[in-house]
Length: 321
Image 1: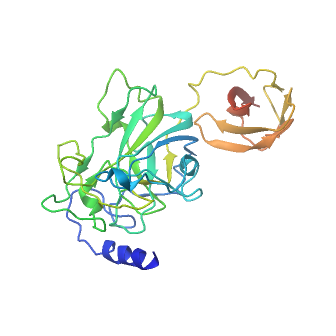
Image 2: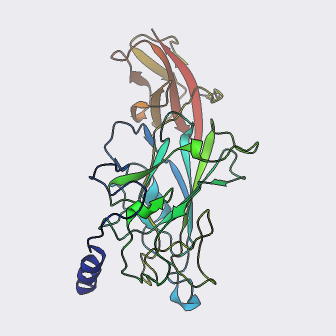
Image 3: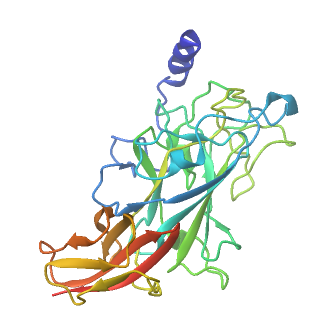
């Protein structure tokens, strides 16, 4: 296995001269890559559902990808491992607060590539109701006169609006403005993001295509447990909780409100998880508590307290004096 990994690394690390019109690899001029530690990220996916694909879509006996679990894609990039989707596999992610279309990119998708040219790609779809999904217009200018194979190299400057464009720890950004408007999509209230693995085959029975109808090439076949797109995380850049309807906290009550130094909780039988966010959706404090949360160090303004009680989300507005 170690010998195989070294072969893959050597073959996929072949230097490619940038040929295409799109952003270059992480660390080079003109790159759009976003590091996981960028201050632009104010949150991460909090729920994930995965539908695996086969290790090789052309071989029904190959079995499904098995690396990671759905929880691997929750939280910050680089912390929880990855979940491999397999050929054509899907992951649907949800967030504590809706994502909105702000200036520039609104979120970024992270993969775990170990090489700037061994790029396993995926389509990105968004939804504001969990039912109707809309895809980013994807472009692949990679040559299709011959297959690149399972250890092939992909020039990132030929790739646009496909997740997996960058190496591990660097996210591919997406701007909701680039999706055509539709009455079935509220770009101010994106609740679901769907990641769909690209099958990089040229065989028309298995190929997947970009917006212009071009077959998209990425390493194929990769008949391993880690087959397909390896989803690490989705980082949120623009998120607002001001549009969330305030929930009743059932038996849990808070006082005082407005608050000056400390939020006190009543009716809590055992410790509960909490997150305290500002009006733009940025998490200010989080942890577990049974009776109080210190807020004396916070600036005056509007905050939202999120409490998980019996696996249900409760949200209440807090005014800090």
